[in-house]
Length: 317
Length: 317
Image (cartoon, rainbow over all chains, first blue to last red; front, side, top):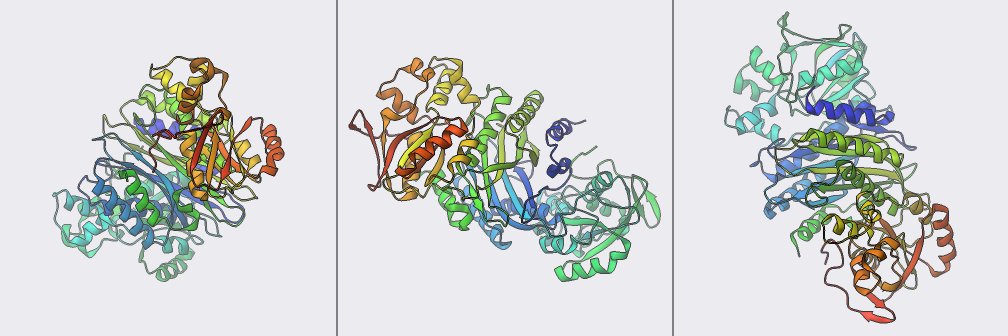
């Protein structure tokens, strides 16, 4: 086990309350009279989760969007945000970041409720924290653990754009601005999550990579997943940048930062899923099936594919 | 204005939702059917909020206790915690810290619900974040803004112990272990806050210093406060360490980290206040009066005292 795994295993031994969902879910779901509360907290560290020269308003946007994406995966309606901000020596960055928090919170109609501002020692990297809370849908907040064999596996939007956007910013690839925008300004699928929540058996957001997040659903549900890599939805911009063969598709499915919704639903719900997605004005694509095997199985044009050594942005074994 | 003030002023312009309470309160209070939700988020940074050689379990305790103290000031009943943890290169520290979070959460019966664990670049200082949420009392969550001229000003427990504990750890003072324990393992006044909430007109916790937190109540309420420094409650340990003159009392009243409750209540509520404190098994002491003046006025043995240049641990003008 990695050091992170040891630490998280220890935290799991502490977080035994049912609302913590074993720390395997995107968010905690706390029973509350008048409506369950959905809670999530994300951190971003300079040079780890964003590039030091990323515009501060984009870093702020991404912090807000990443948290709201966790709420979207629960079908939750956001109630508010709490910001933990560690100031450094760059006052202009602070101001642009705060304005960016305001812009992102305003774009999604979510109030900033409070938080804490502290001062980091000089030359320390920035560490940013954001808590988001929301109300669970009346039908209950979906978890990662409810997928049933025979269910269909779906994903929203397109996959791999943000990963390519990061590669473009790092100078290792070329492509159009839409890809960079997907990396810097992800759009959490709040309306879609709310529309899907009553229909799905499991749901998660794709933050670390399609394949790794799919495996988390499979493991949490005690099921397997068969994914047809050829069905994974790619944008025109991504195809223009890197083509449409097995290699770019595998790169897209392991890149992360997509903030799309990955979900399972009974096969009989296909029409209802498509109708809900249409109401939310987001495309959804069926990419596979829940199996009894307990494994993640990939195919490409009917042939089995070996899983890559790295399923996503984070190692997770 | 300091850089922090500029940043917080900017955040206030964003945090316009009523639940944010203008960011001048210890916590946000979010209306929710079935009971208002009280929310707070605190950060601690190594070398800023704690000493690098403080035992990790004590750092964890303090992070939990500081957040719960914010809930106590609202009379709230804690529901849970979300931890934002940035790992560094010291695995033993991580493990001891996680165990300390478990111990503190367990001591107050508050579940750890979730959070985020990230990796800091090597040699960066640790940045720790914790969100606590709770339910407001049925009588409503007190704010800092309700003090009325003529009200009595009270404080719980004893003041200055933690500040002296920090001086002992820094090697600049001598005193007994109880003082160090007050610095390292503060005890949030949850039961007292719950018992007082229906009786008070304003309440806050003393985290940055008695005088600075008193002035925040005065300013938020648009009133003044007259405080008799001679009435500020000192522990036997503190008096043994530094005597009981005006100088050690001024040091105690500006030291911070007390995590006691500072509150105002109508003069007719004195008996009810004492009875509530007795039920919570915490001593409370009347130290002053709310005035119409708009200023903080200090006296010592009947004579006016100039305010010190520094009212607390943080500059705040």
